[in-house]
Image (cartoon, rainbow, N blue to C red; front, side, top):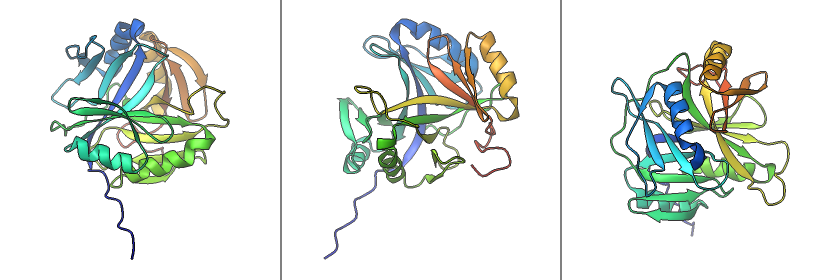
Length: 263
C-alpha cells in the first residue's frame, strides 16, 4: 500500500519583506527605507511599538515592513500572507519547520536551517508597488552555510509549490520565484564556508533590483546616508544608516530578471 503524499501548505497570497534592525536604530532605519521606497510610515504596532509598515503612495499595497529587534544586528525575514494560517503552519511543520512563537492570528516559524519567517493572515493585498527611482526592493536573499543549503532549497521549494524553483545564474544561487503579481521573491545563496562555531548557519538580507542604473541608485542611497561596502561584478553591497547590509543588483526592476537572461 502506498503512503499518501503530504498535503501541501495553502497557497501564499501576498509577501512582505521585513527590514530587521536593532531597536536603538529603529527611527534611523525607518527614515532611510521610507526614502528609498518613497513610502509613508503606518502607525506603530507591537507591545513596544517595534513594528511599522511602509505604505506606498498611489493606492498600491504595502510589501515592506520594519522591525526593531531587541538583540543582535538584525537582518531580514519574510512574512507569508495566507488565507488559512493554522493550515499553512501545519503544512510548513510537515515539511520540517518549527514553531518559534504563536501569537493571536499569526506565527513565527523557523526553517530547517534556522531562518525565522512568519505566517500571517492575508488581508486582500493584490496591487504591487511600482518601481521607485529606477529601483525596487523585490528580493530576500537567504545566506546559507553549505551544510544547510540543500535542505533549505528543498524546504522552500516544497513550501511554495506554485512558485518557480530553479537554479540561479551562478552555481551558488537558487531562485524561488513567485507567481506574477506577488512582490517579493527568494534567492538562496550558498556561502563558501561554514559559519563560525556558535553562529547561526543561516541569515538573510534584502536586495533591490536596479537594472542598468546601479551606480545612480548607489549615489542616491549614499545621499540618504548609506555607505558603500563592496563592489562585485553583478551586485553592490551597501550598509544602511541603521547598520544593516543590503545589495543593489543589476536585475531588471520590472521583471526581476538579469539583463538578456531568464534568471
